[in-house]
Amino acid sequence: MPDQSLSQVRTPDAPAAEPGSTAARGGVSRRALLGTAGATGLVLGAAGGAAGYAAAPAQATPLTSVGAGRAMFHGKHQPGITEGLQACGHLIAFDLAAGAGRKEAAALLRRWSATAERLMAGEPAPHDDTGVARDAGPSSLTVTFGFGHSFFTRTGLEKQRPAALDPLPDFSSDRLDKARSDGDLWVQIGADDALVAFHALRAIQKDAGSAARVRWQMNGFNRTPGATARPMTARNLMGQLDGTGNPKPADADFDQRVFVPATGEPAWMANGSYAVVRRIRMLLDDWEKLSLTAQEQVIGRRKADGAPLSGGDETTSMDLEKTDAGGGYAVPLNAHARITRPDRNGGAAMLRRPFSYHDGIDADGTPDAGLLFVCWQADPVRGFIPVQRKLDRGDALSPFIRHEASGLFAVPGGAAKGEYVGQRLLEG
Image 1 (tube, rainbow, N blue to C red):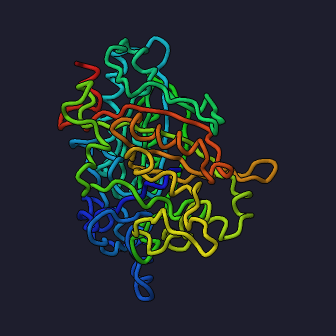
Image 2 (image 1 turned 45 degrees about the horizontal axis):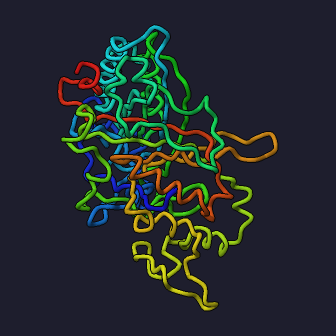
């Protein structure tokens, strides 16, 4: 789990309530009633699951505004990449059905895009809506689509397959379940309400019809907006502030690191990005046996506030040369935060946007829990791969995690109004 990552600050000014919502009708919802009652005690803060990359802290986001958040489907980039971390997420991969090819794939992406546009606006699905999300607003729903390596063979588009989509190399820490890895098509769904997220998942699955079948599906979560008194970096299931060095949109090279340039190759990937998806199981029983000091030595940061062990606060630059009272490095040589620094990996950086997961307790009492790692970069050869290779050679965190599933997907740029995602590939 590379340290060079953090979640993003969500926009503080939520749009007005959608027509037909409880707020628009002048009624008082149970959520609003609870939010009002809580306000008499302490401030219900903003985006608790997100850390700010904005220049100034976000304003407080009361719980009553959670449903009003809305992301736009159409744009230069697909949604679900630079937006703030959402409370609920679903990752799902599909394989095209036997006999389905380019024509069927184009029709499917057209259906999916129409459905995603409506649901992200807080509207019912175009047909056979289940009513699961009725009464809720958009809740910052995003739906993102990508293509796997095998998609291009299935559709006869091998010549359009990007070199950056070549399979990831093997890593010594991999214990990959092939049945839960890869796939022809990949969909990422995120929202701040669990019913809204499930509603979108069900609509996307139904839209697949006979054109594609589910290969694998994973569910995740983050802290709910409003759960903390101020915006702060999200914590993972190890209790650590997870990521304090993500590229920031204000950085001069942000787009260069995260998105394929408009003049990039292949042309259909202009303004797109590459998503590396890894299911990383955390060996929590072993981790929780460590003392607080030992955990901080593994990560290289204080658990309480994310500050580097070399001193300062969370945003203080790490002093890799500073020594402790015993003459050793304050930040150990194999500390996760030291190893993953971009300046220790040829400048390699990625935009990380993960979800935690918990899929129950194994028969031996071990929790099946960890991180649905999703990172974005203009080219995984310059982003994920060099960092993971470095981690593979001696990261102190490695004994406490296990990579159990993996995927790499080409995520094209956003669809213009009247277009569907992937249209330039499938109709080019």
